Amino acid sequence: MAREADLGPLLRFRQKYLESVLSGKKRVTVRYGIVRPRLSLVYIVCCDAIHAEALITKVYYTRLGRLGADVIAAEGLSSREELLSELREIYGNVRESDLVTVIHFTIVRKYGRPVPLSRLYIKRRA
Image (cartoon, rainbow, N blue to C red; front, top):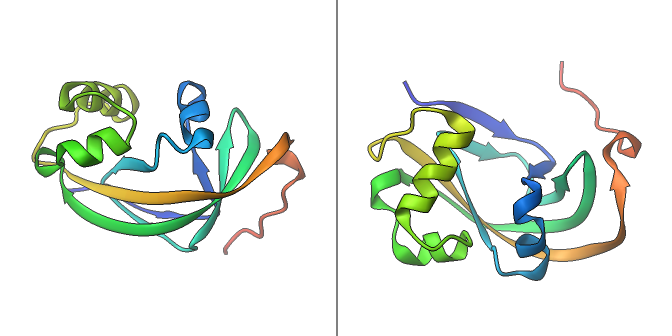
């Protein structure tokens, strides 16, 4: 059974990808399973701090093995093997037949200084 999750206002990235995200080199993120964004405007988060705001421009679901070179390049990676390695590091055993969510985004506002995530109030759903 595929993983399913809702994406709230936070789009999280590892520190090694932050510069690529903020520069616009990385414009896509591939997430394991079915991830449904609840909002189109999200905060870019890394290391428990908000660095920017982004607009989600496109979301679709596909099998990992069907991702094209264009998506892998927009993800900021050089090969399918590198993408598989990254996903396995995060999610564990990932197969090319598994469903993934492809999220396209555009940075709309960069912060001069990161804002600690603890300063953001997010109303929790009951």
